[in-house]
Length: 502
Image (cartoon, rainbow, N blue to C red; front, side, top):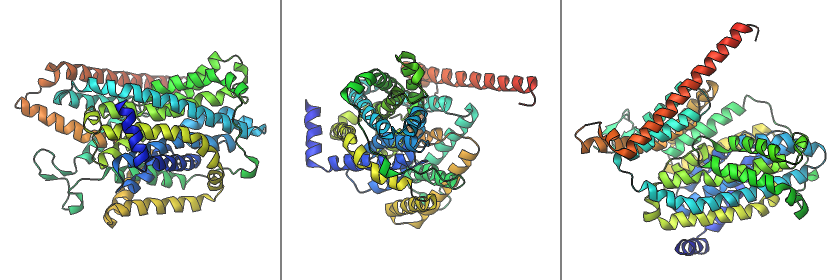
């Protein structure tokens, strides 16, 4: 009851409700623009949260994540182009229904399913985050170091691309995190005589550059997306009779979304396609999948929104983000002086319960805002791509400049934009870099503190039981990923030998 009272107090005495509504609205618009994923929508918003109250700022970002997962289904259904990676599963049956003249019905199913999945996800987040954080209170310096290593290795192992590429980008992120002032001795390092780097590189600059600028550079080389007639599109929410046919698919999607959300490296895309396959397996009409099945929309959309909430469980409990969007949210918390992890519930209970309340408001408000924001979202989708890209560039630069009123930050964000572009071109995963950046302090500081306790004796890491098992698990993930890469390489070699033309 104390948590409920705190949440109600935050919602009624601060701009938290308005932040939740604004976040959902911006998320729907950002998700509706092809190429602007939830993580990019969050990165674009991050600079504008400076100066806000921490609780209001993180509610704004969390609500954006929620809204973007629904917004991605709008172009997926109407123009056969998923606005987000997770909406790719929605394209299969959503666009088919639109071609049959049932686009409004498909949008209504997507909206209702997203709201249901979000409510299930936020319920799981509220019920299980604090108990998990109590488990983490038993951690000491070696255990926290091992936890950071485990988080990095899991993401590296599960991210797209080879194990070597994942390790390289994670190392790059760790290297960036060491720029500035040494956390133990106070000595400056890797600043190259630039006073602007004495405090390190801002998380927001790296994230906006790697995600947003690089995406704009890639989008400039792609054809414009299709258009649709906004006047012919009206959302039609499912009737009670129709919902009775969809509840099984929505339940499957919500359940898989909850599970995948708390698993580092999984994310909405995997949850959406797993939900789609399982919904087809358990459907009474599996033959309709791929031909305009309502269940084929309901399952992945429920999964997407469940992931948006449960992805915060490892962030709040252990300080380990499991997806790009969760990493940006964690970066926002660090920017505002909040340290994710088990002590957060003891030191900042107002923030935690205020965030829970804001996400509840965001998921409920999504039902109304999903209808209201349809017209402006479609208007933006129908604008010429060069105008939209120029407007987003202007948004990026104005947001970054407003942080310190310093043009040096603009050069840095462009530099990291080029880094992100090169990573995209050569097929390197992004998440290990971002995770290396946000976990760099956790890994380095606890490693060095552990060695100070033992005068440099590394045996402390395997003599501490929690640390030993976490590091052993990390080793299993690395070994499994290495074996997988070797098997994939041998299979590709055999195919080339057997069929050189292929």
